Structure formats: structure tokens, C-alpha cells
Amino acid sequence: MANEKNQQTFSSLKDSLSGIETFYVVDYQGLTAGQLSKLRKDIREKGGQLIVAKNTLINLALQDGGKDFTDALKGPSALVLAQEDPAGVAKALSDAAKGNDKGIPAIKGGFVEGNKVDVKVVERLAKLGSKQSLQAEFVGVLSSHMSHFVAILDAYKTKLEGEGA
Image (cartoon, rainbow, N blue to C red; front, top):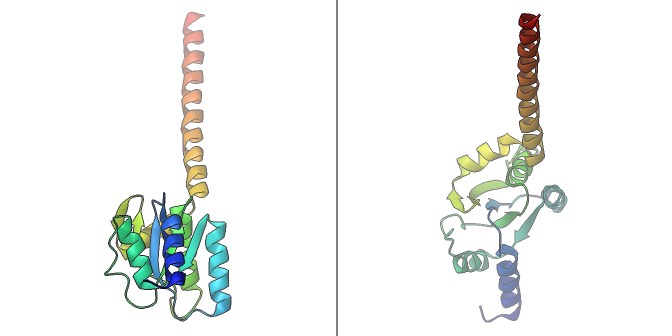
């Protein structure tokens, strides 16, 4: 890795990976420039970043952080970092793969919130939906239960008032 460009790329990769708890290793080979550009945009909208680099550099940067993905780094690979919404970024990858007949980008592996995961876990994560939609669903469930509780309290209050008369 004596090449200055490789050293800069390695340094940039290490900086990008610092503080990242979730990333995915994907095969992007077969995407056109337009499809790759659209994928980058979709991932960016979900708070992520797509990084294309040599497997050797990706592997060294990951191993420097204590993560071993040697088994996933076969053939052309890219790293997809998920800073804000791991499920949203996984969904963007899944939607892009469904959008073409080759099923690309193909997920090779991942690291979700500090744990190495296989392809099946990433696929399930993609089906969850975005962080915002999950939060909205949770708030809806809570408010529904709260309104039921208030109705029960109101009925009990009415019953107590009726007994007192």
C-alpha cells in the first residue's frame, strides 16, 4: 500500500468508519452509472453513504477497527454506511435490488449496531421500514392505549358519581 492514492483512500475510509455502528457490504457490479448515482442519492436521503474502494483497503480499514469481513469481500464490493437509519438504508438497498432484473446491489453481509450479521438479518431489517415510520407507529399504539385508559377512568368516575347520589 505504498501508493499515495491508496494511503489517502485508506485514511478516508478509516475516518468514514469512525463512530459508525452500522454498515453493509454489497456487490454493486452490473449497475449502470445512472443506477449507481440514483442508489447513492437514495442512500444519502436515508442518512447513509455509499463508498466504493478496493477490497484490500476496505478490509484493512475494517480490521483496523476490529471487524473482520474477509469472507464477504470477494469480488467487487462497496461499503454502505448507515449513520442515522439502519432500516431505512437497508430498505433503500432492497428497493434498488428489486428495481432491476439482476437483483443488484446484492448484500454480502453487515454490521448492525455493533454486531456482525448475515444477509438474512439485513433483509429482515429492510422489511421493517424507516425509523420515522416505526416511531410514528409506536406513538399511535401508545396514544390508542392512553385514550382507552382515559375512557375507563371516565366510566369509573361516572359510576362513583352515580353511587354517591
